Length: 110
Image (cartoon, rainbow, N blue to C red; front, side):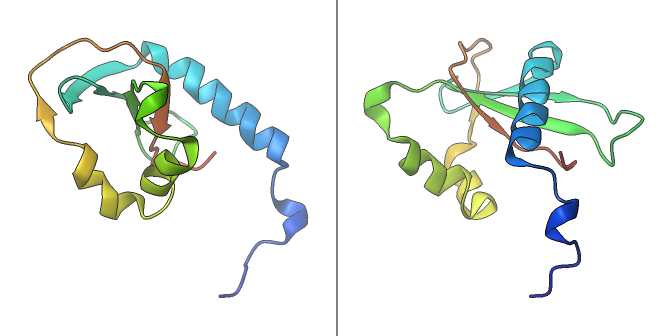
């Protein structure tokens, strides 16, 4: 695979993390969507902004420490995300969820 962007043009890790934190903080005011997995997963969205290529979507989930390690979560949401999504995104009728772990799935790039 050929890289079309020189490394010098990429933002630093600190810049990417800062931008991600801004999106995470802003997402608390987004429109509520559906609940999944017996209300342990809640979706949120916001319309396309003037500098966005597309609308943003957010999935927030709550998990006990004993449920899985970070690496186990990452293997599902950070690797092969699309293939694994159907396994953790099933509808539920519940409305509210307390958030402790957030998985962002935006269609725009940071």
